[in-house]
Image 1 (cartoon, one colour):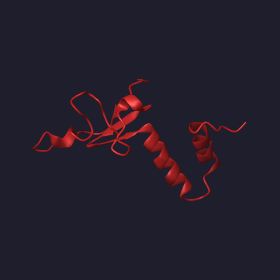
Image 2 (tube, one colour):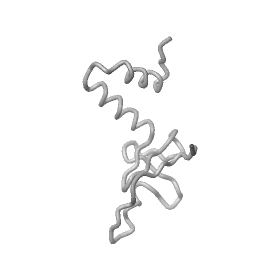
Image 3 (cartoon, rainbow, N blue to C red):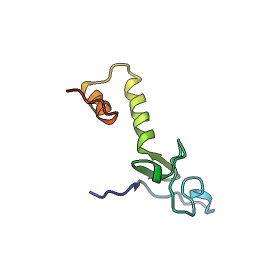
Length: 90
């Protein structure tokens, strides 16, 4: 499996202008998270979608919110959260 920092998902939306990528990818080659605005050089991984990007940290915060929104995460979901946040139970 590739160890690329930027993973591209989906096809780019075709519009009449070239403004599509200006907010998420700049001329310097950096890709920015659409949520926290950090560049791919400051995060573990970046997922690049059509017109939107999310870094691994923002993705995990979103997953944690969605799981904990039910207030009782499953044992499997809790293991994933613990592993990501470095609190694996022994």
